[in-house]
Length: 241
Image (cartoon, rainbow, N blue to C red):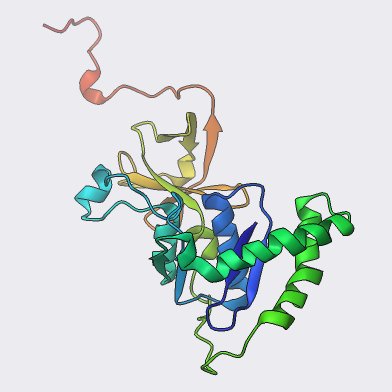
C-alpha cells in the first residue's frame, strides 16, 4: 500500500499495489496528480527508487549531470521538488497513517471479504478514504491551493521508465536482450549511430523517441542482413594486396 498525505490538510490518497517499486510509485503519483494537480514538493524516504547511490554514468558525466533515479528525473520534469526524509520519524504523519491502516483497514477489509487488489482499491475509494478524510482532514492555513495544473505536461511520457540506446548501422537497437528494427518509413538523416530514448510506459507499451518524435519499430528475432560499406567491396577478378 502506498500513501500520499497532503501536508496542508492531512487529506489522504492511497492505493494498493503488488509491489513497492519505481513503476508503482509513478502510478501512484499519476493517480494523485490526475485528481489534485502537481504538488510543489514531495517528502519521501530514501528508498532506492527515490534516491540513488550510484555514480554518474558516462552520458550523465559528459552532460554534467549527477546520477538520478527515474522518479527523480520525472519529478524534475514535472517541476516537483523531492525532499528526502532521513528517518521514519521524520515522516511521522505517514507513519501514523500506516499504523492506523494496519489496525483498522485490515480488519475492515476482512469483514468486507475483500480478497484482491482490485477489490481493495475499490473499497479504499468508496468507503475508507471518504471516511478517513471526513474525520481527519483539516482546513488549510491558506485558502489558496498550491497544487498546479497538469496542462502542458505529457504525463504518459514523463512517468515512464526511460533508457538511452544507440542506433546501429542497420537501424536496430538492443533493449532488455531483445532486438528492435526501426521502420524504413521512420528513418531520417542523422538517425544512424545517434541516441534514442526507449520509454516503457506504465500500461506496458514501449515507445521509441528521437529528437522529439516517435519512431515506428518492431521486435525482430534474427539479425538483419545489411549490405557492406562501399569501402569493403572488392571489384570482381581482383584481390586485395
